[in-house]
Length: 528
Image (cartoon, rainbow, N blue to C red):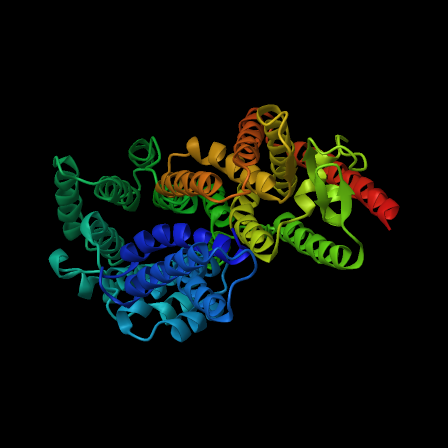
């Protein structure tokens, strides 16, 4: 199979997922899902053409151009929201405007970007991104900005609130905004009536999880507004899934404030520390009003994720230079690229220098099969690594990556013993990070954790399909990576949650990777 046919197969499989996702963002036959579907079909056509022609090279320029166009529209619905989650709203919006030319096509992406901005507390960005038809999202934006009169003016009749192609249980979010507005304006009788109606809605057989959550929070907010701290605590036990921690602390702090309880200051401090940057000024005002110091919160940046992505890309650049400079290495089973001879995990290849060395269990993550391979791994590591690193720490990210890489090689060696194998790529380590993240979210109770669990499982299922469908992709390297990462993730949960444990794991991981890289470099010296 040619490289072009392989890329077309990967895009066609990815497109099946992207079409389903795009239909959740926009009406079924609007521009966004239609372009994604057309791009998926184009990738399939290139695949059929390449396989039918039996090409072993790179294919003709027309097919290459068609596949490049297909890649843009297959990957855009997945990549643009990722940019939004990373805070790159301007880049994501500019790309959306370039790729989609109708309001439904653009609004689907803009809605996701605005939601990401709201979660980060970036109200200015959310306001710029809000589509005209996102009524429910606009109400949430007004509530986040404490524009209570606007909220009250637009939430009088629940049935009039809409928000794109799918509403359903989400309409309860308008009731949540209205409850907060009524309490802010001290319209207590209306707040009582709304809380009673929400309680009845939550008891209905067809009540969704959002309705139940909003009803619980409405009762807690009402108790807090009346200074009933004990009742507020009772209503929030257990904590409603999906409610950010800073919001729970703020409700409790309000109850403590109204009850003139000494715990109010500590609760406002906890709310401040747990809040995203854009929300913290609101909590800082409460602390300053009480004469309390505003704590310094160090923003945790995903430095390990960025450093690891940079290292993988730099290693690929060195690999390309090496493969263009040195001659292939001849073995009894054929020629190897110099980079593979130096660093790949090898099975059944006599004559390769130090071919059975243990350091190859890690060094294979530093070489890749091509630009598509390294680009996909870098993208997924950047997307998932930031999430896991922020949930844990830099050392945990590195530990999960290294253990996933090592177990990817181990599983391949156990299952494929006796085969001829050249294993390259950071997929095992990337799936190690995914496995560790899955171990974390499996124990989470929030809606976000459940949604992330579904996404991870779907993504891993897609990787499994790739492993079966795409020649040369290592199923057992992927399986071992997930197992290694999950092992690290569950083990980390059982260890003390102190920074020292994470630092130790990171130090061991960096040392192991560095030793493997040095050993591979020593082999390169012998090849030259």
